[in-house]
Length: 98
Image 1 (cartoon, rainbow, N blue to C red):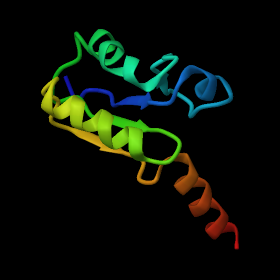
Image 2: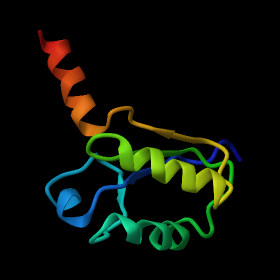
Image 3: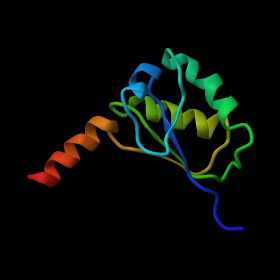
């Protein structure tokens, strides 16, 4: 059947995601970060535990916390993140243009 399609999670709050996100990303649509845990449980209830899950946020901190929850509480085994978040990605893009 092939490998499961990766899940791309936008871990930012709704007002941040509404300003723009990556194509194919699933926003958590939360008002505050503490609402993320229930939302993740709902979103991923039928997702196989070996599905690749990639997360991003603004600066990287929320992704670290989200990924820890995905692994420790929900049992996902293939979890990654955009290191340093969108800010780090923008810095990297700027360095490529130089």
